[in-house]
Each structure stands twice: as structure tokens, then as C-alpha cells.
Image (cartoon, rainbow, N blue to C red; front, top):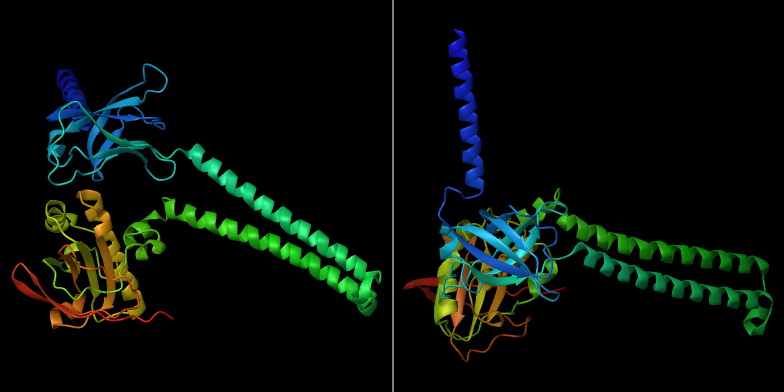
Length: 396
């Protein structure tokens, strides 16, 4: 190959690399997309930088164009975002911008929530609502306060132990009736040793409980183990009973929506949602129609452990409720959950279970007694008969 040919090839490859770099950078900065701008204001941007990601529904949909400091004390920091025009259909007037962190110590980015159906679309250049970021310094202050309380508790325990030692000394010297009865040197030595051992045990137990709680909380957010909670679909099992009711009312629902577990969840043993948009028909109805109350009823198939299936159905009902509450505008106190574990019924339903959104008219009483048995109800979903059969679970 001649010199001229080699020089031409070198120039061609260099131009190709330059063009590829321009295309990649331009795509990231949305230079080749139709975009629009939105603003959000925060008291503290918590390390957010120009060029940071803007995510809508967990998908990279824009970038932070600029961050402007306030003109006077008391004002807020303004963040200007450049967003892909495709997000204009799902970002509404009630959408909220928040500053999130990738893992525990990752980069900061802005997350924008979906708007509610029926809300007006945002306007180019509009300032949307925002949520203050969680600052690590505030968390450390709270941890310090907890540590101070623990130290005070240990001091109180040490004082009680000192009083106990004083009483033991008086008994050993023969003071009082008890001292006269048990004035034995060997017995005193054993009692003193027991007291010291008890004090050490209390100290270790309190430290162990504190360490365990801190470690469990840290594990929930550790990037190495966060996949477990993401796969499971939720973090705190204590939240499962927050909106649970004990059964269904006698009245027939005004409207019912039914989904199969395969439509909404990753696999049989998971409460992690997929295809969330399948729930939008039920969410739109809740947001645009008056009703008394609604309940998400979830059942499992006939296979598997009964206790695990009960917890799984409660978790699935909770995550479905969270999605509807976060993405549609209605009074969330009207939406309840009911996980019923295994379901008996038709062969198809019994294999995998069902997820139902039952909507009852105004005036229907919400069952409050969690020990009350649940009746079977014949419901209708878009004109098709749906059989709901629930079981009473006895708590030990």
C-alpha cells in the first residue's frame, strides 16, 4: 500500500471515530431528539451536577442542563432539565421531581414520577413540584441521637447494678434480717460474680440489638444485596398489613377488574411487578369515577406452602395498591388489600390464582374485623362471570 493510501485510510478512520463520538455524545445529551424543558426547585440539590441523568419511570429520558443558585437567602435552587418529547404524554401537572442516588454512594440523578390520568399536560419551561432529597448528614444526626439514647440506657443499667452491689455488700456485712440469714462469704462471692456477669450480658445484648437493626437496614440498601429485595418486590414485611381488611362485604361490587399473575408478576414466587400498564384500566376507573371503597383481592394457586402463599398474596396486593396510589389521583384511604392465600375454584384459576380490583359503591361498609370469615361472591368483569372464593386464616 502506498503512502498516500495509508494516509487516506488514517484520515478516514479518524473521521469515523470522531463522527461516532459526536453521535454518542449527542444522543446522550439529546442533541438529535425533539426536546422540551422543565424546572424544579429544591432547598438542597445534594451533589447533583450539570449533565446528570433525568429518569422517568426508571428510564433515562433527559439530562440536567443547568443548576441556578438562588438570588437571595430563603429562595430555592433551580434545576433546569432537558427532556425527550416522548415523555410529554406521561408527565402531568401533578408529577413530582426528586433527587435520588444510585445505590448507597452512587451518582445523583433526578427521578420524575408519572402524572395522574385526567391531569393537564405540563408546558415547556414550567416549574413542577419537587421533593426534598434525603441528606446523609441528617441521617447521621438521627443515628447520633439514637446512640445518645442507648448510652443513657446503659448508664441507667450501670446505676441499677451499682445499687444492687451496694445491697449485696450490706447483706454480706450482716446488716438487716436477710444479712443475718445469708451472711456467708461464699454466697456473697457467687452473687457478686452473677451481678457482674448480668451487667456484661445486658451490655452485649443491647449492643447486639442495635448492631442487628443497623446491619439489617444497611443490607436493604446495599447495592450487592438490593437485588434480593428488588426480586422479592418489596422491602418491609411490616407494611403488608397497613391497609389489609378481614373480608369482603356482602354487597356486590359496582365494577371488577381481573388479571392473572402471569400478566403482572415476574414469576410464581415474586411480588415484583412487570407490565404495570396492564393495571391502568383499573387506575383510570378509580381516578375518574366516584366510589365508596375498593379492595385488591389476590389469591394463589393450589401448589406450594400455604403460609408462604398467604404472605405472597398479601405482598402482591400491597405492591398493586402502591402502583395505583402513586400513579392515579384518588383518595388512597379508599383502597384496601386482601391477600387470601390459596384459592379453590375452576381448574385454570386454581393453578395460578388471580388478582382482582373490586370497586364497591358509596355507602358500602368496609369490613374492619380481621377475624371475620370472608364470603364467596360471584362477580362480573366486563360481562364475564368471575368466582371469588376466600378462606379464613386462623392466627396462632
